[in-house]
Amino acid sequence: MNKSATGKLRITEIFYSLQGEALTVGCPTVFIRLTGCPLRCGYCDTTYAFQGGEWMDLDTILERTAALQARYVTVTGGEPLAQKDCLALLRSLCDAGYRVSLETSGALDIGAVDPRVTRVMDLKTPASGELERNRYENIQLLGHTDLVKFVICDRDDYQWAKDIIRQYDLNNICEILFSPAQPQQDATELANWILEDHLPVRLQIQLHKYLWGNEPGR
Image (cartoon, rainbow, N blue to C red; front, side, top):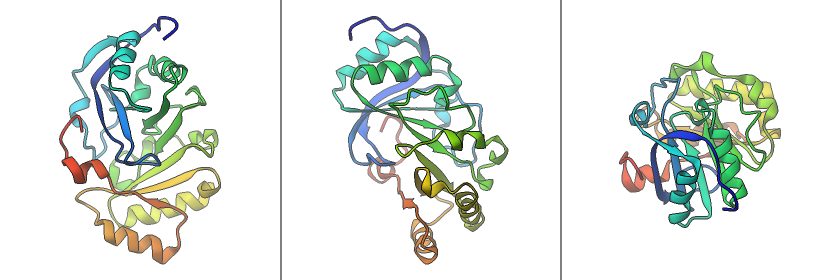
């Protein structure tokens, strides 16, 4: 690192694991999980990150990340963009040469995120309980290196996601991920729906959960 980074963030955990989702699934990755989230999705599996955490300056975060020796870094939460210094963290990680992705709910403006970052943005389905929090203005900010994720809880969620893809022509903007909520939606059933409708989406099953369950830090 050539110069000291400034800013502080509340961090729940920094850990090394295999990426369980998106385009780099299976790749060894450092995860930086920020504390806090303004949403309360019904299927959330990281409620332990809503509170607590440890305040760290950016230099400390970068040092701990470097010690884990990975090419890929994912900044996640909680909702990372709820902390203003998340933008500085993303920029510093890119400057350090990492391939960086951001997992965000899509409820907050993604426009100021460093363009080198791959943005994995949720669109909240009706069964999430947070449908009204979707910031659809973010869609026009996405590019071909970004991804939109739908967590599907039931057939109604699936149909809603189909309609959104059509309405915003999403398949011509970025990659689309469909992820079955566990245990609400059977993955095989979702796969069959996708095939029957010839949807231009990628089915993703959370690899880390099959390897380690819901164990924090994995």
